[in-house]
Image (cartoon, rainbow, N blue to C red; front, side):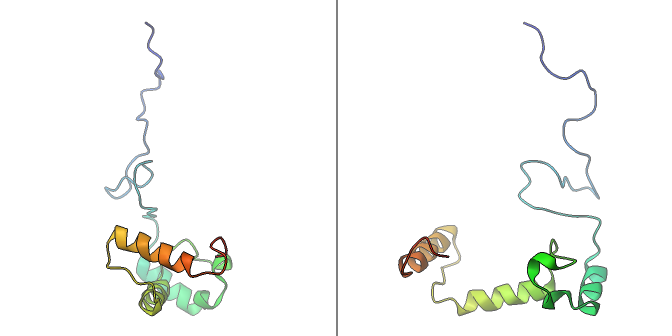
Length: 106
């Protein structure tokens, strides 16, 4: 049987960035090693990036401190909080959906 792999000797996955495999298809994170968190946070604050609707932000792809604080606040205000496990989160999501007038309405 004839071998079907590519004759190209280069590796089939992208090269690492700062020792981290950032584009590997099984990597659950969307990591950008070119961004400096301190610089991004400072620039985002200077241009009031957090006041702009999310899709139109300069740093929409970055998880800013403001985004983290907002997520923590929203999570703690939810009447459908979970026990912190994946199973608990799924159950909380279903409880919240079942309380809606139309379960398909988000």
